[in-house]
Image (cartoon, rainbow, N blue to C red):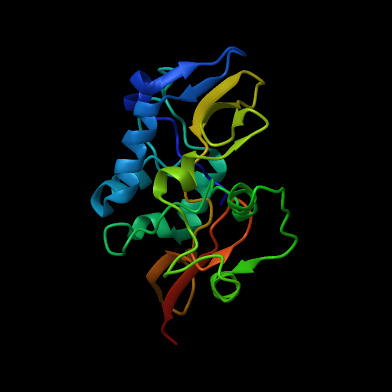
Length: 215
């Protein structure tokens, strides 16, 4: 699905303009989003800012229009976001500070991971201890800085079909979802939709879901 969160209007007071004219989250905006991500109830509310379903205005005051492709998708499939009231909402899948950056900072040398890394491998190498290889929420979703640029703080406008500036989006969201075909002869129900924090794969957390299919 590859949809990010719309930079919703309530964030307007927490956005600044950089020297290059780009929009960026301020520290207060980061704190606001971290608080929403950390609380299960607020995380469910944050999911409703997803471009699949968002209704309202973005930080520029522009009324948001759901893409025609997403509208069609919702007609044909029952999407994960429709089950938000019945399932636990996972941590956002994107945009995640890459493990190779965290390792580089810890070791003081530049590293590049060519393959997916598993938490059990890193424990065996004594790189991490405990249940997770992830840092705190602020660091993992808003702490990626590379070549003097904050990689996760940007609030970027889309381009409309006519070439004009479109709605603005956060570098944050649930890009990967689950869709169940509404016309199927085998009824299906989404039981769980989760992230897997034991696998590190660049700037995404992998998706895991459980679906009950009745034949």
